Length: 185
Image 1 (cartoon, helix red, strand yellow):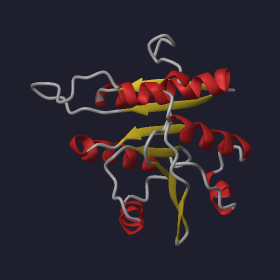
Image 2 (cartoon, helix red, strand yellow):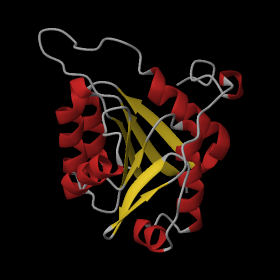
Image 3 (cartoon, rainbow, N blue to C red):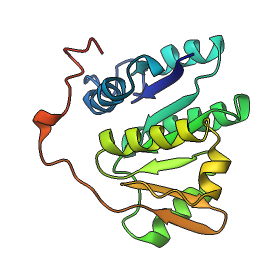
């Protein structure tokens, strides 16, 4: 049975849509994951909070991946907390530039937002796929993976008191990534 993964780069909606851009970042990460894992995963992308809310009412994803930008941080964190409360077995991954640069700042962010299982710094395509491969090895048991001291590229998480942080890896060839457009995402 395929693992269900939701990707969300949420925008505020009111009298106008705050960020009316296509969520290319999560599209690229989802395309790479789908290209890597094929039928083992089903991916769905969300830009509007109401769409994500409706999907969550139907059931839990196995993994929720959220972008973290200054302009939507509170909205995104509200969804992370809601999913953690309603579906504690779901793996919650966050990524984006809205995290501190020092180890102390990153630790503080994760301690203050304990609903986040893993944080991806820099590009997420390879990092998320590496995390997914490890989670498949551990039958999506975050506690077992963490207890083993897993270290993944661009990955940050807390293992008890320890801040686990993988090496910084950057993508140097964008042509190596599949297109979310041609993949229908």
